[in-house]
Length: 212
Image (cartoon, rainbow, N blue to C red; front, side, top):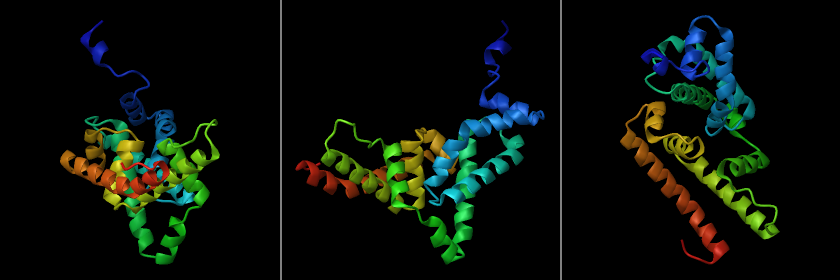
């Protein structure tokens, strides 16, 4: 086996799929879309609350990624590169919506049921079947409080904490996705955690009778 065999990416790796796409194989890019569509939509969903708009932005993200694919050099992971495009696309869309306040308010609305189910899935606050109704209610209230606390964060803090806690990205990957120094990422995540903690600590204290 030659050294090249050791370093060559596997056929289904992101890098290889990018190379195959650039070589004219449309199916290769479709595989990348299938692989990352839900994660991209989840990320955009933290910025934009209208489900139809989320799908539109996700579609625009992949269109932009496809057009810019030749610029992907492999110095960062593909999904980090893709997330950066998704964040920038969502920001652009939000800026355009804010020019029309009525449209912006309509698009940013979401139902309470969607909020609750989303926060429970993302933050693992689903109660076990054996828990009491009081415990189930308490977990839902905490999930709603955390979700509300995240929504109340400034955009730069919300994006950083989302990429870290929900997407599980490293500080280095977040810095690449948000195009900022890693020290800035650490600061934003710390501030976001402090803000969220400040919102939910009183609730936890009321429910447990303990001070946190």
